[in-house]
Image (cartoon, rainbow, N blue to C red; front, side, top):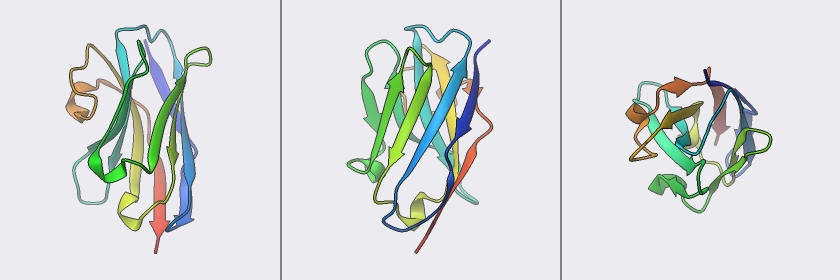
Length: 124
């Protein structure tokens, strides 16, 4: 059974950077995709970025393209989200998520394994 634990959230001023980490335990073979999903107060969960374990292909929601980078370290079973040029609208709880045979890595409903979430707060 795969379990996910996030770390690295915090508070930062607009324009700043944060790096989120997600440690995966259990087997995440090449059928898995991993993603970062965020939930802002009063809003639905939104897929932010996804990465294929098989070939490291990535995808991003338009609002973070050029600012966020998702990456993985297969040997360490780690997923990262480097967030630069942060904006107040990036504020929310960020979840690491995993799932098998995912068609759209930005669709949060396709993921069935979730971490506990980490808070990111960006002040203006």
